[in-house]
Length: 311
Image 1 (cartoon, rainbow, N blue to C red):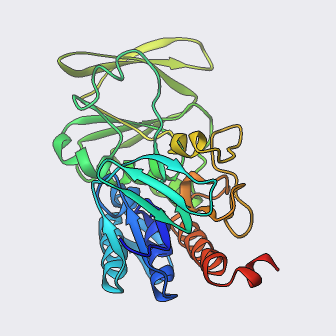
Image 2: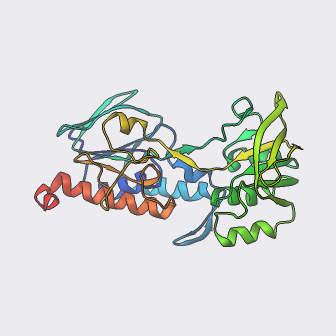
């Protein structure tokens, strides 16, 4: 693209919103996405309390944001992974598997990936009973027994979604209380085919070609037991997609999240980050959208009004 001004890496809520505001500000912008536009929102069975939607499926919300971005003229290049960054000069260079892009500013909105349990059998049975996305794989377990691992909002929402598909669901949490919203906790307790196993961890996943059972540890008693299951949905959080940023000299915190200030600026001039890849503590669609706005508007100042930006 000739005279490109801004490259955005990632087409989730943060990246797409940044693209909307950048294009409306008149910046020549491209979004590069390694998968399909929409991000991990599309994996959520439902999203509650996003302004304007009391409850909406993650897929529908993602589609609406993508349609909005494309509708205002944002160029979104899907299936184009970024392989390297050179961000320290006046011109930022972003290399993908298909091309090299040069721009005056870059916004990194590369999101995160699902965290794994790290127990024996997890890798071996991934895609054969072990899943990280309830809405993607839930229909394969209709009428079967499944286990959900985790205690946050994602684990609770996945469990409630699967409750309408599976015959029996157990949710395993290593602590004595959930970290999710109270409304979700109450919904879990009121769902008939859901059983909560407090202070419990998975020690091993076993089977023959497909998942057949798990070994559970009761952290209070120290006893283990075998539990027959057909599927395991791991929902224990996410880790940031920040390796490429680290290699380019962008500062990360101790947990590998990109460090940003109130304007979403990183330690490199003209380089911003927004969404789940940053060290901002609240990981929600709404906060990702806000960070995308802040990053795009500050990038506009950096590119078009450097005298104002510096002041």
